[in-house]
Image (cartoon, rainbow over all chains, first blue to last red; front, top):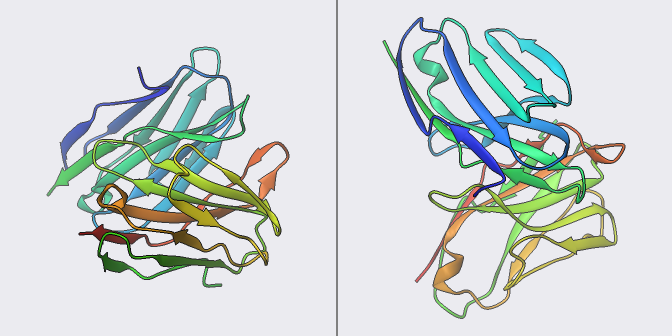
Amino acid sequence: KNEVEQSPQNLTAQEGEFITINCSYSVGISALHWLQQHPGGGIVSLFMLSSGKKKHGRLIATINIQEKHSSLHITASHPRDSAVYICAVVSYNTDKLIFGTGTRLQVFP
Amino acid sequence: NAGVTQTPKFQVLKTGQSMTLQCAQDMNHEYMSWYRQDPGMGLRLIHYSVGAGITDQGEVPNGYNVSRSTTEDFPLRLLSAAPSQTSVYFCASSYLAGDYTGELFFGEGSRLTVL
């Protein structure tokens, strides 16, 4: 079993829909990152959080340390949000990043 | 700021050849790292560095070598390329926020094919 699990693996949506991507982890963590990767492109950091909730534009990230779970929400989704979203945790014991395999999101007009 | 600059973007090698992937950052970050990305798998750490002169192995270090002579540069060397090293490679840097890495900054990636 992977230490970081994301769901769903693939997600399609119509423009304007509310999107939720989930990340569950099984190790103690110091922090959690949400990353975005466009097709054929580089990786961009969206959020780093260790507790609570962060918001940036239409993106919201939440984390529940007790339940070992984080969610990334996209409000009013747009085709330009189409990308792979990656969850990564910083292991408390090793200080190393452990990556999920990503959620591929496609938003259609 | 240029951020993290990674070169080359594409490279084709023959088995047994050696090459170096270059990575440079201009943000004065202490932490730099190399990852490989393979289909169906999460990014895997190859090597990392927490400062000039300090490097350590990650999850999949075999066949790769690194050095950190300056804060800015962190090259990744493939000593004798093998088809199993066909992958997309990413360099990343961050500041160190106490015991863990801060916001991550990635290069654009290098797609390597070994024939």
